[in-house]
Length: 371
Image 1 (tube, rainbow, N blue to C red):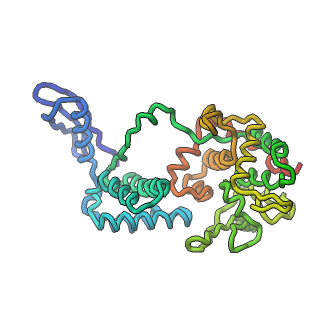
Image 2 (image 1 turned 180 degrees about the vertical axis):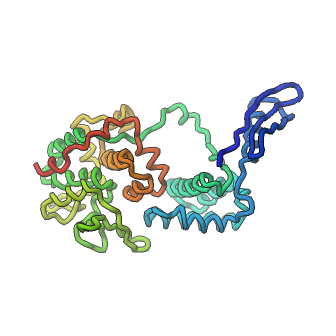
């Protein structure tokens, strides 16, 4: 259903005239309050919100039931668990209210309750992103009224340009990173493990910590890869929560790469055989050093110490998501493969349409590993 737009058409001594077209035809309303531009714009926004208010007569509990049936469809198990937990906390604080009464005040009170409960700031921010994603879905399907997200003004931050997270890489750039890995590792370190981590991020969309937990045989403390001619996938098992397994499909390129690997047990295990210990931090630093050695710049500023940002393992993961979106795969399908809790994160930081030239080159990743 098309959203009703309210326009200011005339301002005089008697007041300001707002004009709009609702479902029954053209109408106008006069505003006679304070005549400052800020107050007039606020009044226009209030009128527009009133005209577009939806959800009357529907209780929040009924909305949650529908969200569990429709919004959860296609989400990863971890995302579903997090969203269910967030909705329970929200309902515990506000109770079962009429959806038409939903306002920014509900969201601010919910955020304050999370902070008062002693949660870490990162956890509070992640929980708020989850509830806002559900609210936006409800607004898009006209189940909830439009709720504007409160913006806490930070003048110092406003003077800084938005910090993008990087960009996708071309196949040639990834090949250069792979060639640079042997030049930046320490003596005795397993070069192939770092190379496999780059391939895993690029072809399977793995995060840094996933590379250390990914194994080729089932284990109680690790994820594992299952290759089957009918349904190749990665099985993820989170032993810290429910212990349920989650199957993430693999692309054809990932299957071809995995079949080309020699007989290995781990993608990048956390402990070496010659007296050195490899952590996720070490893996990330080696791959970033390879990106710098290959002179692959992803951002002029924003790196360590405010300097340039060089290609990292997460840029390989971003390339994986960007190319899937560019191939025409739906956002839900890509979200399943990247395991993002909020699809808006995927669209905001991974769908970098400004680097479309990077999507045309896939790189000879399998061949580069076999050399």
